[in-house]
Length: 101
Figure 1 (tube, rainbow, N blue to C red):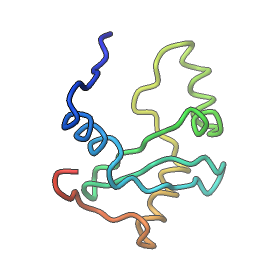
Figure 2 (cartoon, one colour):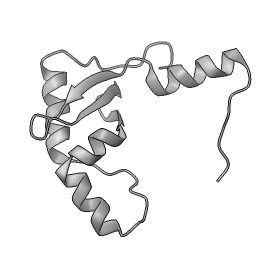
Figure 3 (cartoon, rainbow, N blue to C red):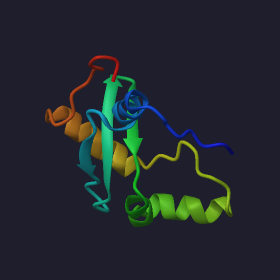
């Protein structure tokens, strides 16, 4: 699979904004895995998993083992989802895109 490699400074900045802008670190209240989260709307949540967080989450570890080498796409942990909802409820995560991000 081809990989996108930005060549101009503007493109590098666009890529950074798209993947990292407004990410808030959230820690799972169960396993303590830390992920980056942003919500552009009430129904849309972006979660950036690190390799460390994936290895720490028992739900993802179990799913990865069951996937038998297949790529986990859209994997979701219900305990982390509850932790994200709690962060939204207490105001740590703002809902809504700013300047398209």
